[in-house]
Length: 164
Image (cartoon, one colour):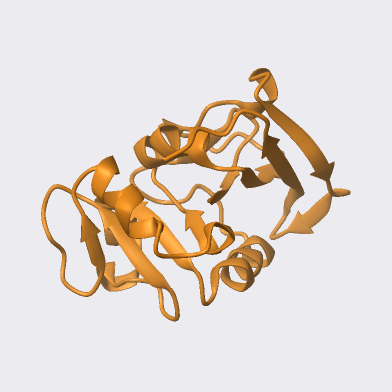
């Protein structure tokens, strides 16, 4: 399993149940990376999409206490882990929100992070992987300009992946 997100310089990922930055190049990277794959999210992440509709051309798994039409609904981590065992681990991506990332990043072998060199005024954060000895940044791109922001594409490896 993998995780994918963009964050500001404080590891913030969102504000008012939305992304903090409009990054067309990063959105293209997200789309190309996850198309045809399995994406895991919480209910609020699903609701933040246009019209609250699931992402097209992907299996959308939503971790929520209630069933949601048009997606694979799972109600707890045990049920989620049972569901994702049906898929190749490299095809499964955690896409948010903050509580889902916090719960599942320890189970991810790779984390794809687009770092934005700005303060987005975040209200929601993910753990700072640079401060955690279990994670190693094995690749960092040169700076890329994206809609007026400098970004870097980073790949982290989890050296202590939890088994589900």
